[in-house]
Length: 151
Image (cartoon, rainbow, N blue to C red; front, side):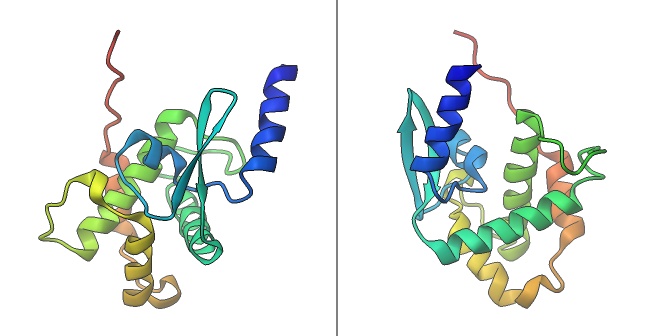
């Protein structure tokens, strides 16, 4: 446990702005031109290179998690989510938002740029008013986390 504590302390020190959508970026369901990958003790994490973008992502992530409590059957809003639920929340939410903002765009999911997507959403829905949360929640609840390939 001491090693894990040391890892988390190093991570907080080396990654001052952890990407709120780190799981989506690392899994490859979305990308972001603001992400910088950081290696710590043979593990990989994602850091945001732009403070304003980080705040926008953090605000959307917090709202997304709050709205998804029902869709993901979250009883304790303070409890950490299991890995699969984090992926459903992040990938499902972002991909559904992409579909809402550009319905005819059949871009590959990994080409969805989170920073640009949320900047576009901010322009279309100032202060988050009118965001299509029902569609986004449908994306969260229907997102299927693919099983890891066996080696």
